[in-house]
Each structure stands twice: as structure tokens, then as C-alpha cells.
Image 1: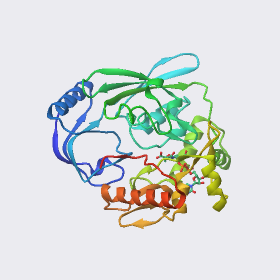
Image 2: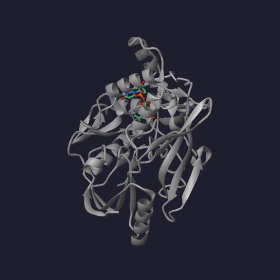
Image 3: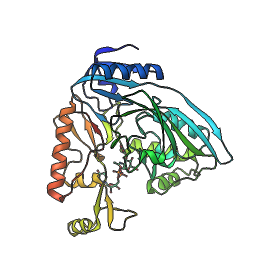
Image 4: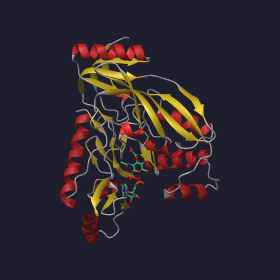
Length: 339
Ligand code: EPU
């Protein structure tokens, strides 16, 4: 285990903001992970677990230990007539797991193609896109307790998954490192084509629906709408979509009859796309210094080059305040803010 000091994390976060970590360690097996946690506990240091760095807003200076999860490995380890069980280590790239599943024609993850980030970070926020969430294919995960180094299995119920939520963002925040996850995939996939753009793209490309075809169109839709972090720093959606009462929706409809909304299980609630609210407040494509809201998707904040985490946070505060002022709705960040 090699502890590096004053390590730049510029290349390790997709926002591309500068951050110097006072200590940094990359771990590639469980022994190293346990030793790194012991070291951090003994030094009473702040600890930040870094996966793909794609859902985190970093400060210019982080005083503490940054632990990069580089545990690798993907394997099928069990099957029955209908399903296969795939174990994937937390340091794998999420899209590599999707590609592995799709190349074997196993169904369940194809709608989650191209989501940036690591496998270990995926359950933290129950990643989701195009009508599917991780929890739909999730079976269980293995995590190491930071305080003791003990390993614990969490099944789906233990994870308390919700919309971009899990127990690891709430009651157990900062208490576990995710070592590996197990997903249960279908040998006879049931495709989810409820998101209109997927159906439309399949038709346009004259593709028969299959896991590979869904992956192909999801990749195309994402590339067209979302900025590639390799050219414009970003963390995908910066805010969560917002749950409001139908009364609030009716109030907004008086001025904006076209407001989009999604019904929920609870008939008194609807979800409104926060991107729409942010756009209506005039932020879409707007630039503030080196930061801004992306021109094709106002929910995505971007680094036009040279922005700091502090500047992005300031922009997000302005956006939150303007949505509050215009619509009297409190929107929430989705990205993990370390500042
Ligand atoms: N919209 C606007 N203006 C905008 C953006 C969106 O009016 O600038 C409205 C449009 O009506 C559009 C609707 O919002 O039809 C929905 O937009 P989109 O399909 O882009 O999806 P989203 O609700 O903004 C969510 C996820 C994305 C995921 C897409 C597709 C969250 C926070 N975001 O975005 O996830 O890819 O749905 O399923 O739930 C991410 O989490 O990082 C992410 C990119």
C-alpha cells in the first residue's frame, strides 16, 4: 500500500475541477483496503472514497485520505433456467459491466448503458435511466465497514433503494466501502421500451428490439443529449427531479400549461423534470464565469474549462434560489458535494 501526498485529483473527477488531496491511496485487494482504513482511522483523517469521480464535486483542497477503489473483476458465478448471477468488483467501470452483460445477451442493464462511474458507486445513488434503475437487477452487495474492517452482505431490502437514494447516502453515510455487487440478469430479457425516445430511435434505425439494439440506441441518445466529460467537464444530472403535490402542479399549469410531469404511485404526487424548471428560470446554456448549465440539458452543470468546485457550487446555489423564487419549489442536488 503506497500513500501518496499532495496528489492532484484533476484527472480523477469528471467535472475536471482542480483538487489537491493531502493523502491518496489506490487499493486493489481487500487486504490493502483494510490496511488503508486502519491507517485512516488511526490518523483520524477525513476519508473520501473515490470511484469513477463522476458524481462528486470536489473542493480545491481536501485535507484527509482519498481512497481510490480499484478492486477489479467481473464473473458469472451462478445460473438457473431463467437467470444468471454476475458478481462485479466495485472498482470496475460501470459501462464495462453493461457491455459484458449485453455481449452475453443477458437482459437487465442495457438501459443503463454509458452511465459514467464505477460499479461501487452505482448502488450508492441507485443509478437510473430510461425507465430502469440498478435496483431492478440488483441482488446483493458486499461492503467493508470503515470503522472495523468487517465485511457485511446487504440484500436489496437492506440497501433501502429509492429514487437516486440508498441507505449509503442516508443512515449509513460514510460508514461502508462497497467491495462488490451481484446482479441477477435475465436469459430471456424483458426489454423496457417505455421511454419514448428509445422506441422512436429503434424504429428510425429499423432495429429489432434486443438488448444489443437497446444499448446501441441508448448510447446514441445519451451522446446526443449529454456532454462528454472528456470534452466538457460535468457530472451528469446535477439536481434530482422533484416530487411535488398535484396542487403545486396545478398552480404551475396556470402560467405554463405545457409543464411536463410524471405520475407516481401516490396519486397526490407528481414528479416534475427539474431540467424544465431550471430552463424556465433562464439558465439553459447560460454561462457564469467558467461554469454554466449545459445548452442541451439544463439539469447538467458544466465546467467550460478552469472552473473550481467552489464556483460550480456557487452556480448551483444561484439556480436553487431562482427556482425557489420563481416556482416556490426547493430542488435538491444529486451530486455528492464534498465542499
Ligand atoms: N427538460 C426541459 N429542459 C431541459 C431538460 C429537460 O424542458 O433543459 C424536460 C423535457 O420536457 C424533457 C424532460 O425534461 O422531456 C425529461 O428530460 P430527460 O429525458 O433529459 O430526462 P431528465 O428527467 O432530465 C433523468 C435522469 C437522467 C437520465 C434521464 C433519462 C435524473 C436526475 N436524471 O433526466 O440521469 O439519463 O432521466 O432517463 O433523474 C444522471 O442521473 O446523471 C442522469 C443523466
